[in-house]
Amino acid sequence: MVNGSMDGTDWVVTLNALGALGFFLTLHLVFFRFIPHADILQWLKRLIIFSICANLGADIFRLKALGMDVFVIILCSSVSVVLTVLFILIYVLGCFGLLESAIRARLMWELHKFHPRPLSLPELMRDYNAETILKVRLERLSATKEIIFDGKNYYPGSQMSFFVFKEWVGHIIKDMLEGNHRES
Amino acid sequence: MAKDMRYVLISLFIYFLTILVHILFSRLKFSRKNQVNVLWLLGCLGAVFYWNVTAISIQADQSFWSVPLRGSCLVLYLLLLFPYYIFFTNANYDSPSQMIMVLLKKRGSCSNDELLREMTPQRLIVSRLDDLREEGFIGNEGGKYFLRTKGIWLMQFMKIYKNIIGREIHG
Image (cartoon, rainbow over all chains, first blue to last red; front, side, top):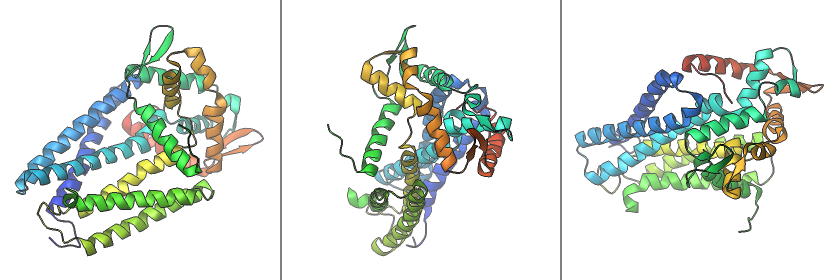
């Protein structure tokens, strides 16, 4: 092992994470065109778990072949799984999320449809407005069981929600950026 | 246990240091564009710092003491900057899904109309249009919005991506 470069273990960890991203992207590009919009979060979760399993399998197989002991395999596999999750997260939030759920991208798409004619706010909101945004979100959250609809009202579903967690982290970062101290 | 994971710990330490310096810088009320530029600059400095610190301080080998994950932990450091960037840039927006979940948690239940009352065009649409204008993706003249060159390029890319993936832009 040379101190200034990457060695076998290092390459295995990084390349397996990239391989898992490739695996995710292949299945994603092939199958996601057939999945209804409301079910997208559910299938995304399944595909991420599937990619992590594939990554873990490849890690264990390759690191065992390199003659690593069990604790080293656990550590390396953990780092590789975290890298896989981050690679996928960046793709989902940076590319797929733009297409699927970014309000800003959709607003620009509405302008693009009529380009070069400029649009007033009411014209822009004719096809895409607060009502449409709410409808799409409610469908998506209902499909993942994060909210429950009884025919009249919506109720929170699962106790641990990704969006509540995101709100919590977002608030912490916002408060730190603004230098606020939240009262308990 | 900590000694087994020195590369991981050093990369995480430098990551949190980078975030801390960036948060302190962001409190100086510079424009958001400059705050983002500073984040990437700090990220690059952090990466160089990590690479040098690990070269000096760790004699890596195949033992349990220092599993050689120098490159992987550099990648880990760089990748971790992106979720922070996303949280940082979204800190000023109200995400509709988040608004729904938070409202339901707070009130216990809500009807469609109650939720719609909270989802005002000002909160969901106008704030984002202002932001797009500030970032140079769109322009506004006489109360009418239009795409600028940067926005047209982005939409061309989205069009190609949308065709590859076979899905519509839902928003």
